[in-house]
Length: 380
Image 1 (tube, rainbow, N blue to C red):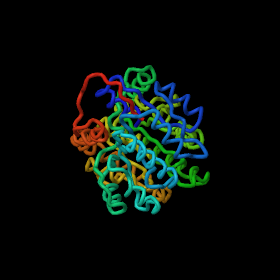
Image 2 (cartoon, rainbow, N blue to C red):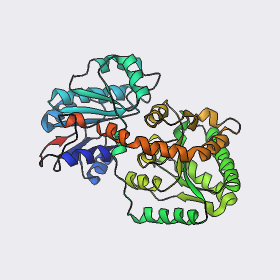
Image 3 (tube, rainbow, N blue to C red):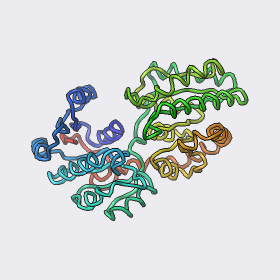
């Protein structure tokens, strides 16, 4: 989301300086490695006085808040409130502020209602799907607009050595008359990722994928999207790969190399379909015109699918996944539907891209993307 939104801002302001709020020295080092400047004020104990002082010194022209899936308070009402109040402080300092498209679940933290309602008028609130927008309007009754996720704007990176190697493997499977699908599961599909549940999920996936490969010309790419050690996708994909090699042999490839977001987007543009429990892996695929079936959680995927008019029959909850042969039947349904779903996704994609660009339109002044002369503006 950072790369996508900043990339679009740089089209309009090529020399813009980008600051990212951080909490630790390690995070600040990562920000510098990305070519940005850290503002290390998200540390404990948290101080609004410190935030206000730093923002007054920096004086950003624009502010962007990555709403994603945290502003309903699902993970932490306190952090959600702080993010919104920092947006409010940026607007008070004279910045144009956009809260980039976020989802809103059906049980938001009640304490956030007044925070949303009392935000500065200069803070533009963007909801990333129609379901979330309706929930938000029922909850806070504040001004808000419909967008699509900012990550749709991310430009794929196709020419790296890693992507070329994966592409060659996919081409080899296709030369054998096989369709190729990306598969992704991860520990965060369960709010409390108990080892027994994760083990059961891996075993069910291995069984389903093995049978489908024996009965259909299907090959698999196991692709991680999140590499954070405690919740890394490979915590599930690595043992799944070990089980599948004994049953499907060369028809499964586990991508063990860490890929950038842009490389991942390139890879999902090469396959016939994607089955995933990661929202932004689904967005990367849909942004490439690739159909998706999703293992959903946190009420997030229904609204995403609504952007494309894709049937909710291609959604499966974690609880359903663990029951009987639901996962196998779900995957078989996707194999049967993926061509029609892909055609629908490609037809709807241009409109969704426009909704994605609407995230930063408020920062450009006239509601439209425009290219302007070089600027010395700053964005936080």
